[in-house]
Image: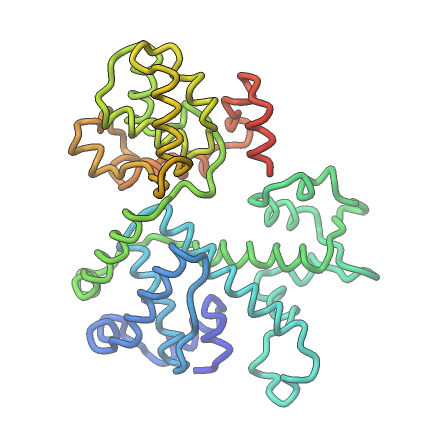
Length: 362
């Protein structure tokens, strides 16, 4: 097994190398603790740090940790875990191939262990779609639209790019971003999948660890869009009660305030939203929200997990997605990910929240 395959385990050649070695994953997870440990680290680091951690010194362990990590992600079966894992694998790969592309002499004696730009273009069927320019590259518009679809920011919009003869002009760094997206798509493809019981049973402890990490994680740090119709049913119900002027218990007030804070709403916006509720005095609401976001307390509080919502009786109107999600923010994140662009109309834009809009764009 080559070190190249261990560094880029998503390559078709890496998969073929594992198949050629007739590796039995059931036997691996049962007998090779180093592989299982590295796979666990791979996923845990993806969830918490956005990378897959430091590579193992042994090539075999590093390479086999990739398919075992995919097994773990499938067993956890949480959208946020799958998304973060695929993104982390892609981000790590980009760091590696960027460094290797820039190397001119160091790898000359070991060319077979170094990945080239053309290798990745061929791997993802982009060799005929990417063309060198005097500076940067021209990319066929179809390939560009497919790989740039997930990128945020005006600079990725086609109308803001030079376009000629069906090709889009991009810089070298932009091409690296598109390759990262191709890798992310490859990693995410097929996840989650059904895992045989004989393998799943061996990984119960690791799966439980990952679920605990997800339960403790602040899943809200990247979300800054307020689309009420995509809120999880529990939060829609609490918000509806607020707006009808109904009384909420302390734990319910905390849950909806923490949720709204977590999705990027400012204290002023939340105070305005709750103004119609007689039970929410402005001073008390402002104090509670500032306390939750950590402005007036040493702790920044996150939205309660589904298990907590259930224990307090705030989990209501469960739908099919609720059955697969363990955190209200995981629900909301998946709804946003699955939505079409024209569905993502921020409540603040509709209600004159210019400052909030500027903050969200930052």
